[in-house]
Length: 115
Image (cartoon, rainbow, N blue to C red):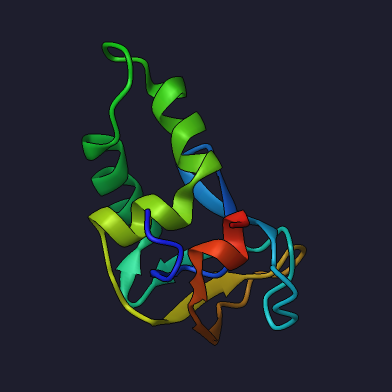
């Protein structure tokens, strides 16, 4: 991965086939624990389906794929789903049921993962 690639700026975890924000990267507009509904108009289900179908693992091991996706979601999203430099994120904050939106600039790979 090139350290200057513009990547999705939030750290996420896959939980029961949904995406949840685990680190906001100092982006105060989206609370940690929020469930992502869509990114740039692509539903979380579509994004996960694409990633699970293209990220490799041993045999049919879904937990191995999920672990890889959790570890480097931004990288895989950039390579396999969308190379945008900004992201419209639809999300539901914790303890809420209203879908909210945030427009987020991408971050470089070195910002997300270190040099």
